[in-house]
Length: 317
Image 1 (cartoon, rainbow, N blue to C red):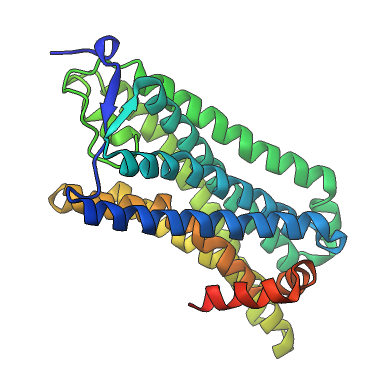
Image 2 (tube, rainbow, N blue to C red):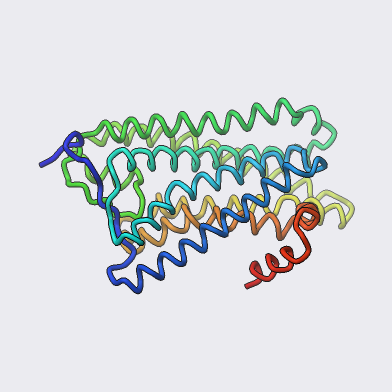
């Protein structure tokens, strides 16, 4: 029996045992990681470079791209390094850092998506008050609140999780360190304190979900009352990318958290974790760039013609 003080490292779950499958995993993860880096970096640069995009919707999108870069950079590089070295090791401090930063970025993303839903609600349902309710200072305060809430959320959960005595070995059945897998290593009753914290956090996240749902119900009602078909199309065009990103984030994260124990298996847990921790960061820039004509126009002005054609070809492939 060992406790947390005697554990110097954890063993992560490998994607495959054979070298050929490990190489395939490395190539797929590397391609996804590079796509996420390229897509989110282009969105950040485009929004920062073009002053006409310095409006609340794109300001929040820039923050979302920064969060996605942080989230995928927390988990994937370590997995890539382990695949190259044919290793499973991660240090105790490295595991704690992974838990903290991943939870920080994921929590901040959820709070930011809630704020982005409010932005779309004000833009469509209360357009005359948009400049007042979403001025520069208000946007900065809301974005800072999303980051701060994510930071506080991550600090509480990481401190609570890694203060638990670990009595079930050091094998983490996941390709990165996450709280549910760490709790499985804790002593029989010691994890109840963290479970209470999870319940409180879940209640807060549920309140955010209700707010998002209410916002989009009001948006849908306002759009359907618009007399102009062109106006309805424009309103839907500004909401659909955010709704698609939100649906991808919530569906994958909810399935990972709420799937029944009978469906739990190492391979399924691995696939689900990739869906909610890796795929959104790579898919979000594509979703926004494909559905937002203003962003595509600004991006085309930023990129040289030759590189732009090559990038378009890569996205199509």
